[in-house]
Image (cartoon, rainbow, N blue to C red; front, top):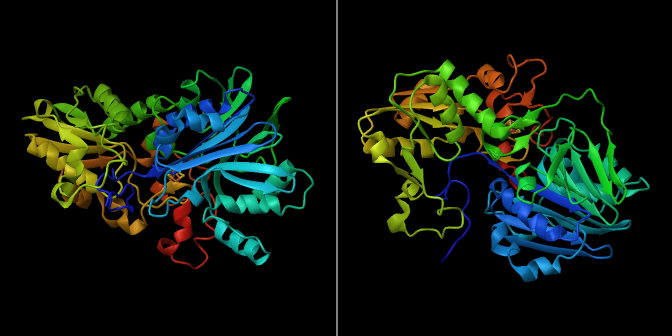
Length: 491
Ligand code: SF4
């Protein structure tokens, strides 16, 4: 049987990375809103590859198309785009733990409320969604999906305030968690970020229309102009009269943007929170070289995410950069499940060692992170089999010791290699001659700070420190985190 989706940990193409679980895009005030939204989602495909959806609004009716699979699988079809008529559209790409991916969980969600239709797309995770859902169900709400995003819809639907924006703000004030939302109503496109600003959301402009999206690469693909980041805790309402900014939350809330966006999630050609991701990764690589130099002949990235860090390391260390591992870009999540006879090939289907760059050389392998360590073991085996004399691994993030509950697909702690062993034991486990990670303060230095400020850290770094900036209300409710299937539906 052909099977396209794999429970996490069983997918032979699993790259052993944390995965951002969603990307969002919205455009208001453009005659080709849907087609630009499809292109924007295509640029955000790296943020979610399991489902995509667009809802458009033509001034009278909403139109919706949601599918499992990649954006290009469905939204390059002219007849699909033609159905999505209107001057406004929002879209969403989704990654999930895949066994749970069913069409009813694909966004944007749409609801016909008393005050008019509402479509919503969400990147993040609501950490008190379980309790809110229980409360809403006790009051008679009937849920159609298992997504935390639907809790927001029901809070708006049952809100006592007069207007839709007021109901939304009332709903947001009840949420804990991380969210970047784009919402289309019959009157406006609305964007909102949680008060800590964990997940990114930016504002752009195209031909007089306005855009909200996760990353600037989604503006570049359609030739749109960057205006600014939506501020943490800001609600932006975009209607025919322009952009209106509301700040419903106290200004004292500390900003804690996800530092992993710079390490891995965001595309290197994006600028998020005013920082170019490519430059950030190069600076992290350079800092890694300052902290953990090694005598070697060549710096080799684990492609693709290790490339900018390896360039930075190479430049700082004065050791030549070379492509010692070649990635096959045509093997991905849409590849059919292989037969048992080729399953053992595993990582070789995606990566191959370039013997010409490795034979007889002392190699520094640069990767952006180590999660379970499963891919690292196989990559090191490949590099050794290609004749490398020594293999040293340098990692452009601190050890990942904790799970993320803010919209990122993470294994439970017991599956995170760095939570189970120290660096020396990890080196033996992975099979390298030496292993080192950038320090927490080194990472902060690369991001332009002198060091991490312990009482008011500049970023969310909880997966490295366990210092969770937003209350984990559901998770701390006495339940076993690993058993909370609802959490698996993070968006
Ligand atoms: Fe990002 Fe914080 Fe989640 Fe780590 S725990 S991935 S830093 S949001």
